[in-house]
Image (cartoon, rainbow, N blue to C red; front, side, top):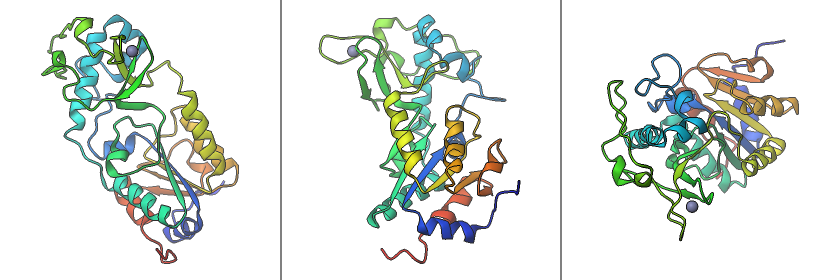
Length: 277
Ligand SMILES: [Zn+2]
């Protein structure tokens, strides 16, 4: 099998003819904005990593600790901003939509940086740090409050010597639907949970109709997202990967551009000479 091409001029020709672009994004895009993942070497909150706390079991055992973790992650996002990759994607969507062309972002990231950059068509397959879901009535609501509830104010410090705040359940975030008052949880997909069926249906629709697919800053090893781009490539649709290194799927793709996506993506998505609007 031949190596994928890293010929930008060639990619730009394909891009200029695309009517429906799907952009799959992962942790690498957020990492360039300094968003911590709490995974891998050095990725700890207190003594734990994401896979220890981002589970239904951890929440059932200790909702106060899990809410401290998510409160910290929400507050950290107040200090982070979209980077040139997020901005290039949002600008591309705005420009192409004026030309009757579509750009949809399908992201594993839960930090809402694509929306903050201005992207409108975004499918957040792992949910959002800024959505809550009621464990009683199931209601999902956007919530950007800081702090999310008074009891979490000043809590959530990541230092390994910090003691648990041990907040009583009734003082954790509660549902505001009339007569409910159920315990809220972050509306994110935790380890061991399945993806939202409605979002998956929309994702499938995008993958089946796109005529160009970009895979940006994702290692392509998290299922089922790992199957999305190879599925598009199998239809004969061009797929371009933008990543710091090769991934297990690289050899299935037509293009591969190595490096920080904040550097590689803006020139790839800027206005093409054939664009008239
Ligand atoms: Zn409720």
